[in-house]
Length: 133
Image (cartoon, rainbow, N blue to C red; front, side, top):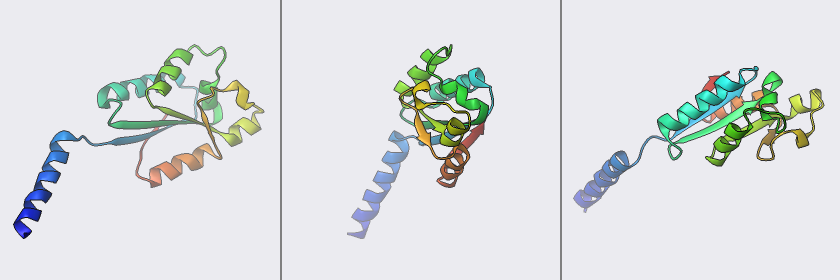
């Protein structure tokens, strides 16, 4: 019986190793006006890791919040495409409130979080890799 259990365990481990790939979790903190470079990074990560093995969330606060404006945004098609492939975007409620930006000015698929910085910290504490732009 022990031999069967051991063989089964090894088979499961090997099949997971051979069939599965590491799942990457990345939080991108955008707190600057480096919008184009940030989107390039996210698109390149999608190409490198694929959509099935890489979960990405872009958290915007401070000047970075402008990336999420749905009107007059030359990056809008790229942002919408990334969203459709599973990239999540989050806006800091503090920045929206302090800059008097209504939710109607940002993309409808954007989640609003209580604090951009706190969201990044929570994600890092949960084991997500971190990139700051």
